[in-house]
Image (cartoon, rainbow, N blue to C red):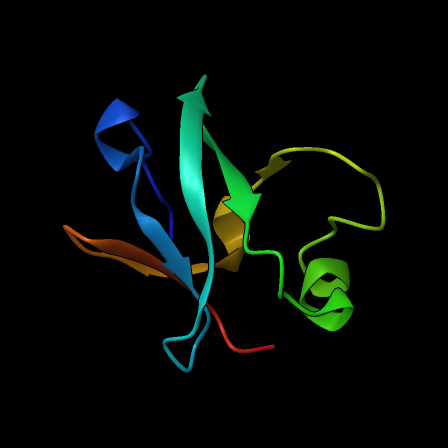
Length: 79
């Protein structure tokens, strides 16, 4: 999916393929969403998204990880 992100996506839930929330879109800068991850998100998911172990407050969500976008949420693909 080629995702087109705008400021309208700010505040949307980011969920995994099973519908579990993994974060919220904090901002969209230059068409790239920056996600504030939920504290309980596993290191495995962070690793698959390329978010690593850094202490960043938000992380870039790459469009190749996006399965779908609705009015309420952004769903990432199954890994």
